[in-house]
Amino acid sequence: MPIVTKEDYLRSLRELGSVIYLNGERIADITTHPAFTPHINAAAKTYELALRPESEDLATAISHLTGQRINRFTHIHQSVEDLIKKVQLLRLIAHETGSCFQRCVGWDAMNATYMTTYEIDEKHGTNYHQRFIEYLKKIQSENLMLVGGMTDPKGDRSLPPAEQPDPDLFTHVVERRNDGIVIRGAKAHQTGGANSHEILIMPTQAMRKEDADWAVVAAIPLNAPGVVQIFGRQTNDERRLTSRLDSGNPDYGLVGGETLIVFDNVFVPWERVFMLGENEFAGLLVERFATLHRQNYGGCKGGVSDILIGACSLATEYQGISKASHVKEKLAEMIHLAETIYSGSVACSVMGSKTKSGAYYPDPLLANCTKHNVTRHVYEIARLAHDVAGGILATMPSEKDLRSGEVGNYVEKYMAGIKGVSTENRLRILRLIENMTSGTALVESMHGAGSPQTQKVMYGRLGKLDMKKKMAAKLVGIDS
Ligand code: SF4
Ligand code: FE
Image (cartoon, rainbow, N blue to C red; front, side, top):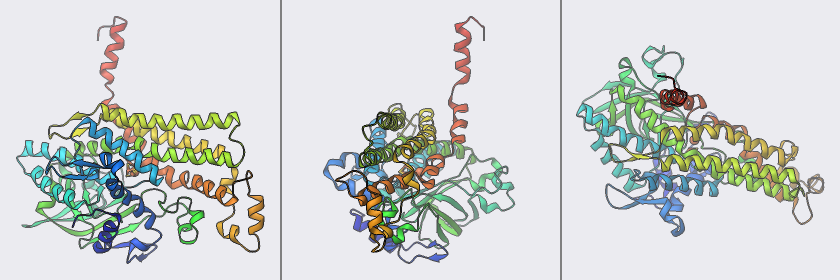
């Protein structure tokens, strides 16, 4: 049965029964656990928006494989228009969640694998692409959510996979059998891992010939024997257990709900293996996945920033300072920064091109610049948010104090803003700002889709310095 509604999605997660640990304990049902439900609600929006007539055009697409209408998060981009719709969709969903909704990572992994398997087959005469198409048809028809599993733990970063004292610090093949392969290792920081159905593992970096056993792409159900997930902590996450108000964004959480996904000798049948040992394609696959994910960041973070700007504007109204010229100026600056990152995502999509497989791919240099801008602009937006919201962000009393029979009246009286706005509403909006500018949210903007240094490496590769030197030399008559 395909997943159509949010209820279908929740049921599918219960039936899947992935092995997930939090605080040292196995969680029997994540769909009813407050540490997980905000992330699940956010991911569920990718299903819900597909059912709304007003967002159907963005949230669904026509499969080029079957001609059926499918959820866009399972679609292979067939045009520049598809690339632009992707970015618009991400901003739209972020407006509903104010947080990461996780499903883009698997989507990007699918598109990168689709493009790259075509080219591996072209060179090696393998049949990975057709295998992947068959797998993709299942994902599209069942409307499954995938994790894009790229980041390996990496151990000693100065050593390649085959030279690590512990070879499992990069995910690798430990056995080749007649019916498939056995995988060991782990993927770290896996956005949406707990509430996805499958993981598509990919190499984490370019691989040498000696690292061929680490050059593996494979799809693994998250309830397969030997797959164990350990859920990561986030800033103020225990507040979710005690107070909706103090949580800030109680229904949708903070960022993606990341897990460490361990593969303890996991068997994968051949029909789910899409690269095995073609090490020279690992770098290309990583670059494509990274570009496709970096394309997104002006969409989702642009949308999240819109919520933060709205929250700051309300906070300044509630505090009676919205007419101050410096406040207007700071809000205008926040809007400028949010639209700047969004325009980067649109630009790299507009400048996208067709790969040999037929799938469309954003301009990689512009996509990297977009993500790099996010590592800066989101911090600056947060700095301005802290500036206009005031020091109360760091000191306000809890919801329990607000509701206390003994001190609630003091909180009500002394935390009040302008007449006509309740103290509770003032605290709600300030808690939302606190949540959206907290440590975990900012770190995600810095390192999600790759740390800024990985974008700088791409400038060296794609920045056409030789051409630029020639243009400068020609202008002043230097032969070069
Ligand atoms: Fe999607 Fe943005 Fe979350 Fe990445 S950070 S999974 S692009 S919402
Ligand atoms: Fe991310």
